[in-house]
Image 1 (cartoon, helix red, strand yellow):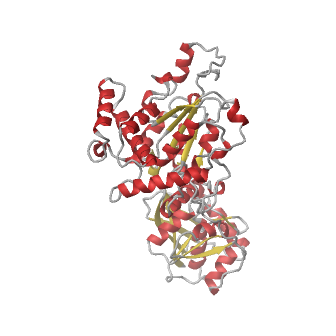
Image 2: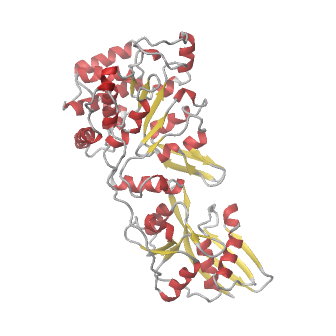
Length: 508
């Protein structure tokens, strides 16, 4: 008979909860009972742990085994409980010392042969372990670099259960080669100089990057809408350290860390297909509640091409995260909140055939079909878009020119300088981007010049602007002022911002 205790971490979204894994071995009929609201994957851990222990040369107890995961009221999910259960079982049988100090947290999924598989969410789990006072954490070797991102906690990486038990008995860790993680300096293979012409669209891209404003590109196929959107991360400033950890934690939970360099300071770029569902866009799932595209694009760009082709309700589901900067998903197992601050970029053709253009290209669509096509984008969603640009096809001269446009590095320097001006202005405030200025402050401390405000009030009286549009124009005007070196937005800044917002006659 024996009793043993180990610790692990259970994630609810990005929030980690310390879990005590208690194992009791007592006299009675042989059996294995798992308590503490486990899900299906966790309930199956009995067979994985049994096979891993026996195939690692250890002994499996043929007595009554009770495993309790505390706190019992918290639902548990995933396979990362395998390692702490196996270690506690061996401790309860007296095959391993019952460790009290240093406090160790165990994470890992066991294969039947005893090897350890990588698990999701290691970074937020180790952050939670450090918060709860753990001294060290034992993780699969495949998760070592991710766990090492957290300072102040010792990371023990093991490849199998034999190495784990050997370390607990001797304190000696097996040596194995682990490549260091990549340089976090932003590196993008895409450069803005690849885009021919498009002076207006490039200017809109720069203003959007300065203030974090949402964009809508509309134009015929092949004019460069997707190329422009894909190059937005290359002109955005590098992520801060706190943002890097938050973004990496989200990608760890979502299982998409392989798609970007670990600890990369390059803002993420997410481009879901227009056939995606609301659950894939926002997040959810029947078991563990996973982040969707909006959260994976946190601190970066969410690009939706062929926006009118999206199913009804998918784009409208973005309205709430666009306002709040977070997504709360409620299911029967509970509610999870993920951060979702992203720059939204929509792209669409001007008509069903895509040939409509201000240069008189041959479009056979009727005015009614064009209107019906564009009305698939709801008014409330479009009202949340700050900048709208009609992307014309580049001219022959622009395509034939050997002179390249400005590179992403040059534009990024201007964006960074403008953001520094805004950060100085907002020092002491709860926000740092022009797009985040609260409405009340826009009417008082951060209003434009008197003539500029009179212009906006006239447009508001004529019902050409909604109240939200009024505030959107002012925020874009601040970004224009920062890029032009103006201390306060003047009438020219406000008029340009208004033209950016109302730049598509098709929606008027």
